[in-house]
Length: 267
Image (cartoon, rainbow, N blue to C red; front, side, top):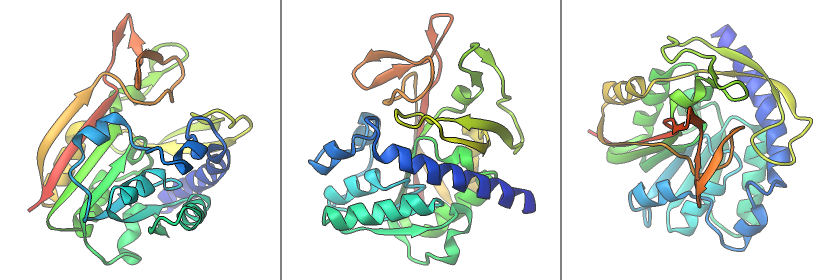
């Protein structure tokens, strides 16, 4: 766990710095959100179970725009994130916009130390699980936080996407990485306005079978699974806009897998 703590500390510094940049970015369009726009993309809006009147836990919530979007839809929401700056920003937005929400700073794989409640829905999305070394520990935490019969939903970047080196269109990372941590010097971010953000980052690639098996092994029945050749956000270098809120990364003219979604129910 010593090495993992080093990874987590580095990633926390990275996300504290990125949050500062993301708040003012066009990518997140905070002003549009304050005027009533949702932060939820079309895939989530189409597939997500009904949230009105439900308690919802958002894992790795960043600075809370998805979480607060669900609150506007009638859910009682709690967001959790490793980044101090993200949580402080989310709490400030909740107060400023008068949207009831609870935000808690915690490493996801240890969140049972600070959260004992169970929820009707647990949710996570886009660029979340790649920051976690052990997908089984993650699934265990998901299961602990779900009520019996509760629903789990995730929309996540496809691990095949993470294998590619964008500039050279070459596979640079293995799909079957067996828990190996990968290191990169992060320069900037996936948004505008993040020039000068330079930090070490550590990430992991979790195959879609590993994700589903980890959930099943922790008592969550997978009842829905989908894959998409696009994602809703222009957040990777070399990505092409195919249609509104459809961005594809192409190799030899073919769009590669970009997103997968999982819907589960706690047994």
